[in-house]
Length: 151
Image 1 (cartoon, one colour):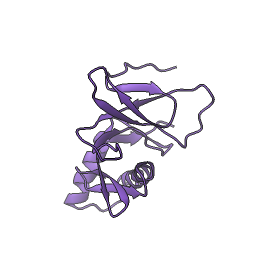
Image 2 (image 1 turned 120 degrees about the horizontal axis):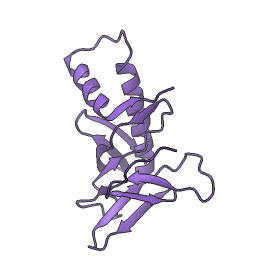
Image 3 (image 1 turned 135 degrees about the vertical axis):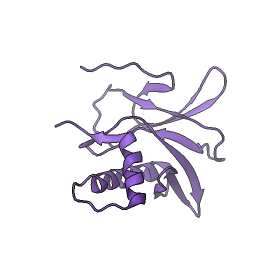
Image 4 (image 1 turned 180 degrees about the horizontal axis):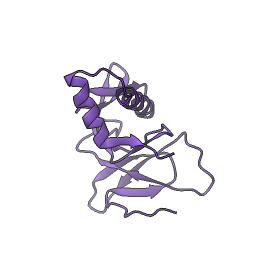
């Protein structure tokens, strides 16, 4: 079993979306994997984002994304996302590369973002992919956050 230090901004909890209040009264929002097979009594580690504000519904305005669902890829570090709502859709935006996921709620937006960023990483990482200056910049940034999982 692999072990790693748990950062202070992490929580260990059962899967699902969770809101936690710290001793200082600061609300922290954790987005934990919901669609992964998890056995009864299992727990997952999630890096959480501290909300600087939030929506009236309690939705954070930003978070650290750590739930990449592609089994062939793994995250090197959490991806900072901005959360916005417009015209009934929630968007999860990675501003550094202007990529996003959207959906009718935050869970759908994060799931869409996970699929979008994984597909983008795979396509940009293909050996013969002709990349211009902008796409090379995106590939470099994504490579700071994502890497292939060893087989």
